Length: 234
Image 1: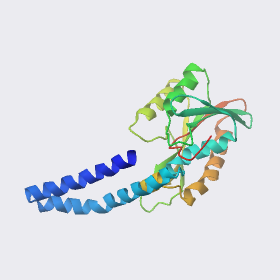
Image 2: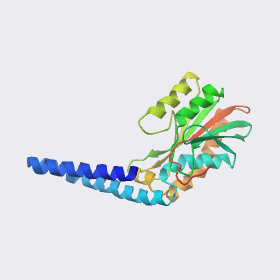
Image 3: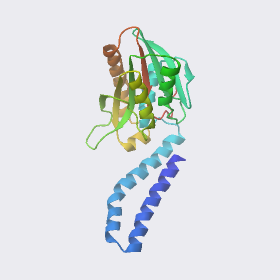
Image 4: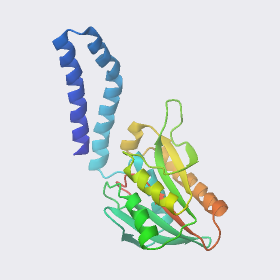
């Protein structure tokens, strides 16, 4: 439904510029449309490919975060933890890991901000750190699958989830670490490419290094796999 809606929006944008240029006899309006057409066609083709991936329930590029989270779970039982969101508890080198991701294998993104607030403020968990994994939009010339590290909430969208996560972390003085894997907007909504899949074990190694360097034995750590969990189970 979202793919069809996005394609319909592209159609209306193109029609708007064309009819406006024709109505006003504005050459420059049609030039603007001509300049935008390569990007519009690229988006339209990506959306068409996305529809194929969704029909086949294939993991998409944006599913990198949930894939990493699922690997970290290692089969640990997951419980429902809010709308379209699950949480599981596991251990790594003496640390207690609370892993949060969207509920798979349906195409959900979950509510990580709500889950984090519930985990800390309702359950009383006091993590030594929060590690977030997500896909990041790459620029032309950057390699797909390249990994970057940073601080702060790694999550896209309109900003509500980002605000919720950073508000909880700031109120409780919990550092947030981010690991990002670069991909294009086309790669994010189409079937996961090999370069993105190959980055998963590398991201896991970086997460393990972060846990070892930034936390101590006996600490609790929250791991959040951000993204669309289509085709990715628990």
